[in-house]
Image (tube, helix red, strand yellow):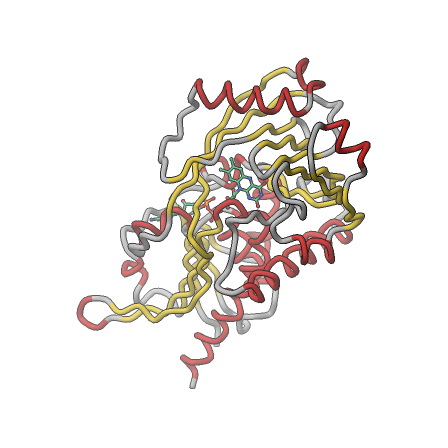
Length: 339
Ligand SMILES: Cc1cc2nc3c(=O)[nH]c(=O)nc-3n(C[C@H](O)[C@H](O)[C@H](O)COP(=O)(O)OP(=O)(O)OC[C@H]3O[C@@H](n4cnc5c(N)ncnc54)[C@H](O)[C@@H]3O)c2cc1C
């Protein structure tokens, strides 16, 4: 007999989870998956981001082993999209040669031991490369990007073409879903702060420029703070990392700082035409929460929930891996129901 599953959250985490849940044979025949959110596509944080596949030092799961598994699974997922989807470039997913620099950390990248294994062409920069960019330490590797303004519509059509249901609705509490679904997967990002009262979730505000600079063909990043990422039609310049700031308006002071850092980093950007600026809030948590829970509400009503939120700076990087983990937990909850 079919079951009913609701995924709450229409950002990259919810959409990836709902899509993979439908496709991985995780549910019995006749099941329905509903994607419920109060914001979709351009309205979400995910949409503004050209997600570079690169877990940062503030990204982690409950254990190192679990985090590495998420990173590996995600990299495999994106690599398979590139290999098997003729329109991969059109949906914003592609490989990109990249320089990562640091003036403080010789290994440069926090998750370097796993990235060394999975990223193609991984090597330390030569003395000439470091001199050219005026940096102390550096790594060159081919990583991936998923440009969400193209990738989210692609996921949405993959989901709906297999019968997925999309519902626009704001939830005050997950209690509103009791009695309607067998399992709920909570991918509400920053919204989890109110939706499930998780006060470990904080925003980390980030400011981006989108510029026209077609001569930039490689990605450049300095200590996860200053970066230059060429996408399909424009180049993204970033960023700021302001903890616990909910301000989503463009601020002149941040604009000047981001612009100045990027121009110093890559002076050839000076002729770039500014298209627009964007501010987003990364949904950060000390560790990403992928956990199952049976929630109990007033009157003893219960709801089986799998949480999948708090991806901070790494939601695009890690959403396939955390989705696969969440799907395993959903299957366990459905099995417990049968037993
Ligand atoms: C400037 C910047 C640069 C970034 N760069 C990168 C990068 O290079 N690589 C990378 O991997 N990541 C990057 N990130 C991080 C990445 O964007 C996030 O981790 C990711 O978008 C989080 O996705 P999400 O689906 O959890 O959240 P969101 O996209 O915010 O989606 C949350 C969803 O939950 C829904 N929701 C919430 N509460 C409720 C409610 N009560 N009722 C109904 N619906 C609800 C919302 O409507 C929305 O649909 C960047 C972020 C920023 C801001």
